[in-house]
Image (cartoon, rainbow over all chains, first blue to last red; front, side):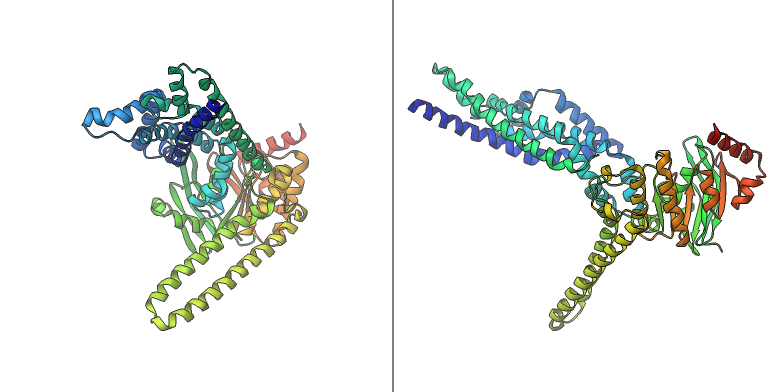
Length: 215
Length: 292
């Protein structure tokens, strides 16, 4: 029994790292994704194509590979020092998720009818006012379901961090298997399930909150 | 000089020349109906008047002021265009209400934003004045300004609310003030859109086929509202397929075909004794459509 609590606490420590990666990725990737979305919709062609190629590369290669490149790349290519492991993981996650988010944003923004922009224009609004006052909330309403998908995937993708020996929950559980203890590995599912459960409730709540209008 | 003078408007999209030199004028308080078959350039003309499109050639004068000149068309800044737009209002075929706001907020939003811009402009001016004045007077100035700004804000807010209530009464939707657009019928939505356009007190209110997206039994209520505006001497331009409406409300009728004005005159002139063969054919066709 004592061993159970001991391991539970140990896994909880690892889960803290998982949450750290999760939270940092959301904080940086959500706004960065919007910037990339605007880039990919830019009327300035070179910018648009640069962003599109970048998104293609990031979405077209495994996240695990990207983590390795970010961690080892600078040292191998330029002889620079290594980033702190957790920082390298977060950088890779932010870039990767920003690309996925940017496509969701783009889809959401492009789904808003031209009439909404034009209605704002003939009422004398500025571009910024039209975006923030008219379009944004409609976009948010549309992208909540795909976003919740992506965010839930992120929770589980954090386990890729162990490829460069970041002590997240699955790495810790895996280390127990080496000592002959298998059950902690499966026990981690409880942590993930509880966390994803909370997120599901949260997204359900947001969707319900936005149900007062229809687009 | 007439109130509105449009001079030789031309617009092409790629190889397709949609407006081939449109000129007309309109007096204050007049209602102009624009008729013609689809694809003839009626909507493009309205969009050009509202600066949603920039004409390639031509000029526009409103109340003696040269508002647009294609020679300088590309050189107008966004802010200038926005200012010019406010002379015109536009009611869309598809209403284009903002779905996340109540009827009331749909009508007040643009006014509120404009009032806010005015306040921040005054603040900026005040700060500049403050920097130039001697130090000991500054505290008193600040106090004065704060109270004047507060009263200005309250004034604007009360004004906007009062006007909105009036407008809601005028389009007969007072009890729907807190409803969301999806809760309204098409006819009601279009009436809100009319109130929203009127709220900014445009010099000229344009309607782009305001009843084309409505079920036949709902067109009446919208046309009635537009008719009601005529008596309150708004200047209006209505693109419409409702010939009966054009005839009874318009002071002047413009028949546009293939990007040119084929015929214009009073409703009696255009409907009863059309000079052009095309007009005659078009009127014949729309009569047939009614009786089929």
